[in-house]
Image 1 (cartoon, rainbow over the protein chains, first blue to last red):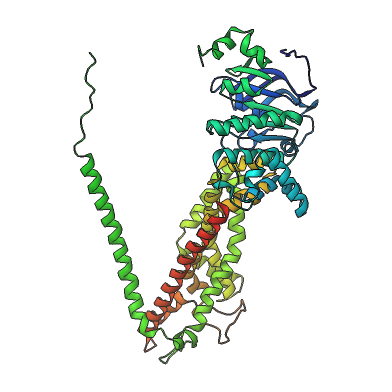
Image 2: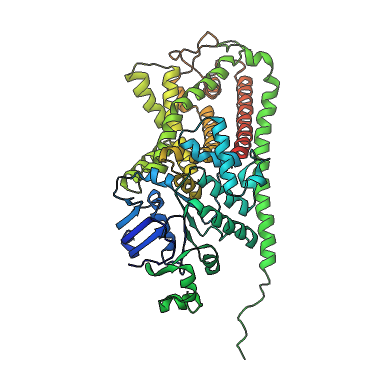
Amino acid sequence: MLSPQTPITKPVKLSVRDMDFRYGEKKVLDGLSMDIQAERVTAIIGPSGCGKSTFLKCFNRIHEVSSAVKVTGDIKIDGVDIYRGGIDEVDLRRRVGMVFQKPNPFPKSIYENVAFGPRLFGVKDRTTLDGLVESALRKAALWEEVKDRLKESATGMSGGQQQRLCIARALAVNPEVLLMDEPCSALDPIATAKIEELIFELKENLTIVIVTHNMQQAARVSDYTAFFWLGKLIEMDLTERIFTTPRERMTEDYLTGRFG
Amino acid sequence: MPAPLPFRPRRFARLTDQVMRVGLWGLAAAFIAVLLVFVGVILKQGWPVLHLGFLTRMPETLDAGGGIKPEIFNSLYLVALSLAIALPIGLGAGIYMAEYAGQGRALRFLRLCIETLAATPSIVLALFGMIVFVQMMGWSFSIRSGAVTLALLNIPVITRVTEVSLLGVPRELMEASYGLGATKLQTILKVALPYAATGILTGLVLTAGRAFGESAILVFTAGTNTSQVFPDFRLTVPGETLSVHLWYVTSDGTLPDAREIAAGTAAVMIVVLLALNLLVRFLDRAIRRRTR
């Protein structure tokens, strides 16, 4: 088992043991084990097609809505198995929020986008909703920019604003974990910097797992980094150590651009 | 020294492009011209007949000067009733096919049934309606026989339109909803259907137009007579519509002014259909602004 050592370890939020993942006959992830600590940012890096996005989606079981998949092994959140521990996948997705590769705001107003989640869970009172929307937008560092145009359509915002809106929308249902699937791949450098800053602030009380193809980004935002290759976890450690003194030759080769 | 690349300048590419552009433009223009002439002739012939009396009088059986008041009402009433029956069924079937049915045999079979029903000639539906509703159920020639049979014509179209519109909803939006902890039903109701609404609505109005112009089905189920009461909302009375009236007066031949009445009726139908199509565009734009 690969267990990173760190001076200040946090409790384990997500633990994965011997996990295999199959789409039909095809094995996409093979024998994965890792621990992800609470209130830390864990980055997942690796070449395209290494299964990193698939891995991320296992934590909120979102791949199940569109295709038949088979997961074996254990994935636990706070010690409870999310596949067999009696957790409802709909409830799981409330607790484990997700930000996608391409900003995907609903074609509704900014306000309605953020209020969408709370409304799902029966929040109807206008004052409560207003409060939730404002606090989510503040957490996503978007409030100052949009407070005067909450009724305007979200699709008219810039890409970076849309992505922060999607983060606000995810935060509005008060998740414990936030999964980010290459959240900056469609954004320009300035918008990217804003999101990275945000990630740094959000980990105060949120477990963040971010998939990225940008190694500098992993180095900048994460506490831990896991390197995937062909559906296998090659190495996981403190980000600093991965980028300075990786134990595996393959990790070093990838980070120095010798393959990938 | 590398070999020269085998690229030749394409001398005729630009010319071909121009020729195609002009050719396609010509085809479009010819089509529009045919349509304008067609509509123009109908409106021109119908125009002298179209006065308030024609629209507000009851039809005559033997004398000249009859109106089409009850036919206008019956047409609209039957379209509304048939849509009211077909909409929940078609919408439900479309939602099932797009969101719930797997990619298995059941779905293929269902799709085959829907497509067969959609391709069934309306005269077949008409005779089916006459045998089942008019005779076996004993509903005789009535609004209800007509509305139910007409619904059979509408259901496959609405189903198909609903399915296609729902399949067109971007996957990212569905994922966003699921990702927030929405159930399947919540995702369908709050994300998929609002997004698909303009497509479904457009299909619905086009269906209304088709039902409005339908004649064979209604000749055999709603009959060629109208109630003497106006407006008569009873489902058990016969209900001749505009298109049936158009056919009946021209083929029956007892009315001295059959030609004028037919021309006027046709003009009214064209105007209503034009209005329906304008309504589609207007609604589409209004909904699109809110949901896209």
